[in-house]
Each structure stands twice: as structure tokens, then as C-alpha cells.
Length: 218
Ligand code: SF4
Image (cartoon, rainbow, N blue to C red):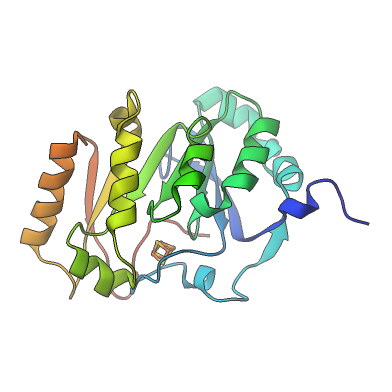
């Protein structure tokens, strides 16, 4: 017999507790979903791209049960849950259900590349307090070579997000130097573009070929 919420059961690659100032304010628990719309060359969590690369499946009530153990840490530090992956935005229905069950004081952060259908972001908009956005590179050729996809949807979604009040304050954009894919000049172009959009929180860093891509570790 199926439990309530089983129709919203999703694959995850892991849950990591007690993260401090790594991916969101206060103490956070990172929930890393399986699956992504991109195929980045230096993806650290490459298991999220393989069909059977997940560790288990979970429903919103099951996740809430699991992460509730750190409720006092979240409340005391202003922390909460960070959704990563993979691409968490494609799990918007799961996150919607979870957030409506979770304590409203929890701070919700999303690490996303924004290359998803708009309806996911519309559903997430009232739920997510902070976005950490990996924009890769605004040059479409570089982006396509590196991720296998076009970047028009990610940039369109970024502009859409910024149309909402105070959004620039709630967004950190990660701008990577990508060995063999972009140059310092390309990175400067991306920074300039983001500045013109009103983005002030920019995290510039370098992907490593051998230890690539994100700061997540599950
Ligand atoms: S690096 Fe991130 S956006 Fe790129 S394929 Fe991996 S999980 Fe997806």
C-alpha cells in the first residue's frame, strides 16, 4: 500500500547535515536531488546524471522526518534547508509540498543553474528565500560547449527573477573560470553583464578539472 506522498517520491543522491556558512545562512542541511537538465563537463556530482546514480528515493514527509532532528539548530542560527543536486528546481512539486509541511521559520536556499521551465520557478518563488545561481558563462557558445545546452533559458529566468522586489539582495551568482572553456576576458564579460542586470553578490571562482564544479559534497 502506498503512503501518502508516495506519488511525490523522488530520487536523491544524499542529505548532508550541519553545514555552516557553506550554502546558505546559519546551519543548513543540504538535500541533493538526482537529475539535471545540463551535462557539465566538470560536474562534481556526476552520479546525479547517471540513470541509477541515486542513493534512495524519498517523499516530502519522509524528508521532513529526517531533517527535523536539526530544527533547534535551524531556529537558533536562522538556518534551514538548502536544495541542491543535480538541479533542484525540477523538483518544484516536491519542494512545494515539503515547504508547506516544514516550520515556516526555516530558511530555504536553492542552488540552481536556472536552466529549467519557468513554471518550476513560478511555483518556487514564494518558497525560496535565497538563490545561489551557477550561471556558467553568458557566452552562448562557451555555455553550449561546457553544458551541452543553450543558455537563453537560464538568462531569461534570471531576468524574470530580478523583476521581483528585493530579488537582487537574495541572489548570489557564481561565476566560474572554466579551464579550457573560458578566459579571464569571458569571465569579465559575464560579470559586466550581471552588473548591468543589478546583481551585486557575485562569487567568482575556478572549476578544477580533477575536483570540478560545485562546493557541494555529499
Ligand atoms: S554541475 Fe550542476 S548544473 Fe552542471 S551537470 Fe552537474 S549538477 Fe547539473
